[in-house]
Image 1 (tube, rainbow, N blue to C red):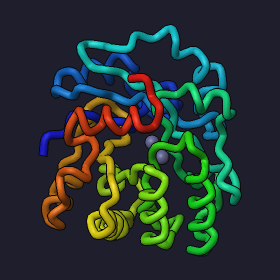
Image 2: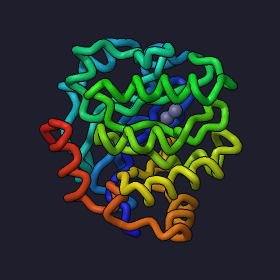
Image 3: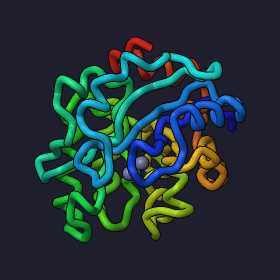
Image 4: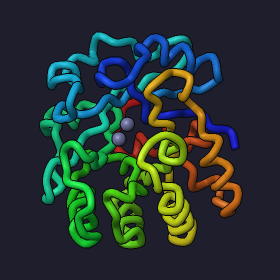
Length: 240
Ligand SMILES: [Zn+2]
Ligand SMILES: [Zn+2]
């Protein structure tokens, strides 16, 4: 597989990550990525940047070291109505918006029904582009229901490489199950690193192995081809 983009990365701005935007972009360029997403945690996460950070992307270059930059957010789902910690007027200006559930902000261990209903409601927001790390066992879901709605709403299911390595212990089985469902129901996925240090950017090794094992068709992996990714962004109304 030839991955051209990593759309889920953090910098020191998130408060618990360790590289700068320039370091991330330089590393992405060094490893040959074409597109990089800078997606800090939404404002409600402890240590995350405030609203003004997300409102000033106009000062940043569209390209760094030959890498096309997408400036966005990993917004937090903050209630069981699927609301997120990003004002609507900001959401519309972001290049990319991931939504995720995180334990400091949402209680883990709730019922499958409640988590599923929450994510289904979040997907009714047309500004949601990617569902972040939904294999997290702290937020169990009815995977098939979520995957089918993602198809209907043209939302990408993220398969997160960190979920297999350092984060959200116990995600690997769920992620594999989700990837198999995406294959079965013809639903697009994106493979992301969720890097909190620049050396993790573009490291999709474990997920790649899993996708090969299950025979995932390349055309469903959105960031395995630049034109395919750009086409998706255009479908979502992004002027990239
Ligand atoms: Zn996250
Ligand atoms: Zn993240």
